[in-house]
Image 1 (tube, one colour):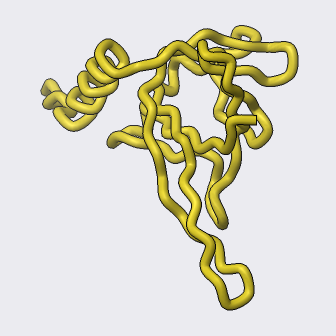
Image 2: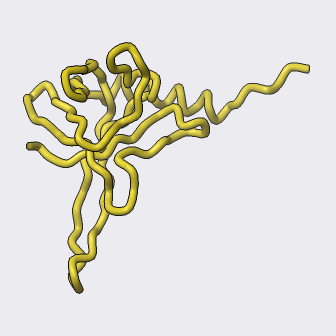
Length: 122
């Protein structure tokens, strides 16, 4: 018996491809001496940090990219805190973890898309 296609996974893949084709920016993702050229979509994630009795509001600049494209030194990797993303303009953003969270979030039913959180420009 043939298993029915996973329509949600197909839709997430189509959306990621369309975003990359129509709303992306050219960047270089780097970790040490290793780097890869990507065309992620830009997003943002608001978050707040409690500093004593004051809540400080921030906004992360996010890069949304298919996880299969994040290849360094021949291996598919996950984002790590301290990695850098350099835009064509020369602005450099550092991959960072949001308060109490990871530095990226998987998106889509199978996690095939990554939302990478950054701070910057540096």
